[in-house]
Amino acid sequence: MGKEIAEQPDAVRSTLLDRRRRDGTIVFDELRISDQELREVKRVVLVACGTSHHAAQVAKYAIERWARLSVDVDIASEYRYRDPIVEIGTLVIGVSQSGETIDTIQATREAQRRGARVVAISNIVDSSLAREADAVLYTRAGLEVSVASTKAFVAQVAALELLALRLAQLRETLAPEEIDRLLEGLHGVSGHIATALERRADVDLVAGQLLEAHDYFFLGRHVGFPTALEGALKLKELTYLHAEGYAAGELKHGPLALIEPGVIVVAVTTDAHMHEKILSNVAEVKARGATVIAVATDEDDQIDAVADFVLRVPSTEPMFTPMIDIVPLQLLAYSLARGLGRNVDRPRNLAKTVTVE
Ligand code: M6R
Image (cartoon, rainbow, N blue to C red):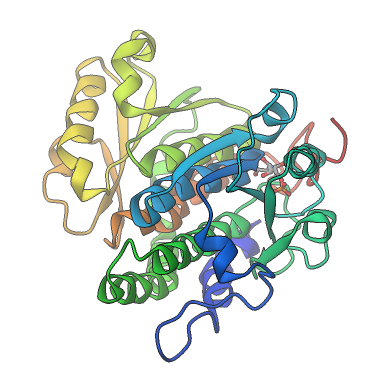
């Protein structure tokens, strides 16, 4: 797992390689879906499980914001039994590292049966999902063997955001200069991930002080929300401790009752647009005695006053933050698990690929 965490800059770089022509057009060689078909898309539904579902949730924000298309994200095992509505112009995107997860395959089959065009986002070339879909966009994270998915997540977000920009290009919902600016930013992400990885020692120091803790809440807003969900999933899988991810705005609607001394709150605070709101959520949990770990940008000069521990990351376009912010959260789960004597490569009860329902 440590090796795969370290490979994340390459996973993003490779996934983005050769996807842009000189004139700025975004190209997907293996997408096998025409520009006209993409232009005619009226609604997008993403189906996936686990970490891939969190990457899909990030994509919802990007596709809606940039391509102005309505997007639903479904847990694959819920979609297939829900009698879903597939209207003309529905594009279903199945997201799966392995391309062999049975729930995701069955969900996309159901969508195809109802007339949807299906795009697979797969890390494994020629996987079942890739073969059955109408089109495929490969992430190029390289083989991921550790049960806890890490580099596949950042590669999936990169691929999905590139697809979101292609949809925006075709639908002319963003100016060409804005697309160029965002593409430049996207290409800068692997460097920022490398910087976050260099700060591993800071994470180890924090983890070393938390070995007695049992309850974790991960909070985020906007794309920080799926990042929080993914951070909580990593912690659960690797440490077997109680961890929950929440949209920070939901705190007051129930979970705040669980905050007391001894509870650890991990807050993703990097989104500049939501900064004030998330700081107020941090203040709320702090006032109730929680220990706060904040993932914050290098520029954030307010966070030290409200958080007990701060894990710094380079700042970037809000939409790209999940690929960078997840790094300290992966490292935190990894470091805590090692400190607690868990086998990070073989978490109990879990398989790398879930091929049964
Ligand atoms: O191969 P897939 O992306 O379809 O796998 C989906 C989930 O089983 C997977 O992401 C799982 O949640 C990981 N163990 C998370 O680390």
